[in-house]
Image 1 (cartoon, rainbow, N blue to C red):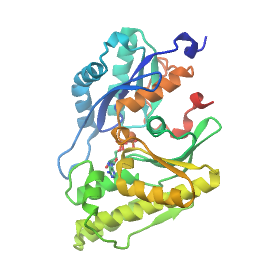
Image 2 (image 1 turned 30 degrees about the vertical axis):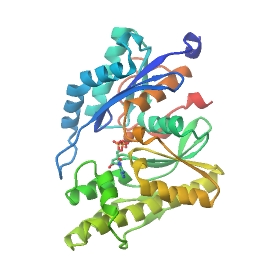
Image 3 (image 1 turned 90 degrees about the vertical axis):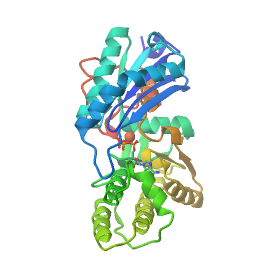
Image 4 (image 1 turned 120 degrees about the vertical axis):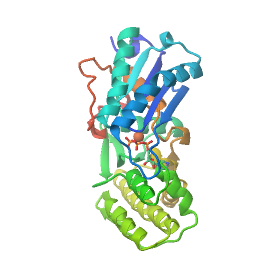
Length: 336
Ligand code: ATP
Ligand code: FE2
């Protein structure tokens, strides 16, 4: 019997722990977000993320985040029908915290376990909150930069970064400038007073490179270029590259919607550039609800609910973490 026939309405809890954030979300099978609780580890100014510190943070905070989510939804653990977790990609020590917890909940409460791909969860929460049907997806975060579109059962990657992710480039440049973490919002704030200085613009076919910009920014900092000018130029250059590739993806696929998801989707200038391009070609531009653009449990819960509805479950044997799991390896059974 298909899982969808086993139980028509259900509640799914999702655990996110791929990197900096530990989150727990609860959604109904109808797409209603009942709760979303999370806590992000913030390293001190100028410091990077150390995986061991992150996993310790997640382990310590997990019980109170689960309690906050259940309270927020007005539910008990026994009301939860399905437990989903981010299985990858991500940092192994962090992924293991969420996976172990989800396995434990699945065994103790005797409920099905669903391993979720983190990028696919960013896409699905974007679709749920912004409402597009068949978009070209621009997924921008600290670990990923991908231009994606659905075709024949999978989310296919049309273009991506050849080196660092755009969010990571923002975080590294912010750290150089002594700004606090996460760097993206700080760059956006400082960019408001800046003006444009030429910077490396690297697009190769449908792929992009951001590491040249970071190296160039390092040199400019030593030469005394103002932080505002560096931040402004970073936004203009990187976002123009991303907009160019997205436009080409729209043209190749004949799709008429662009959806912006991932942590960097919160950036107003990125949204503006994409909107202008879409308007010029008569396409619709959608952005994930900013409450759910960054890593959160709600996105894992919703992607888990979609997978479960279409008959997917993850056995304990197959619940091992997948630190390098790619977006295009997932069978998108719920869109078939
Ligand atoms: P993934 O595994 O999806 O790569 P992640 O660990 O990067 O996840 P997200 O929460 O999806 O986590 O994205 C975080 C990134 O988003 C960080 O690099 C952060 O600097 C960036 N970011 C957040 N807000 C903004 C903003 N307003 N402008 C630019 N970048 C931003
Ligand atoms: Fe993410």
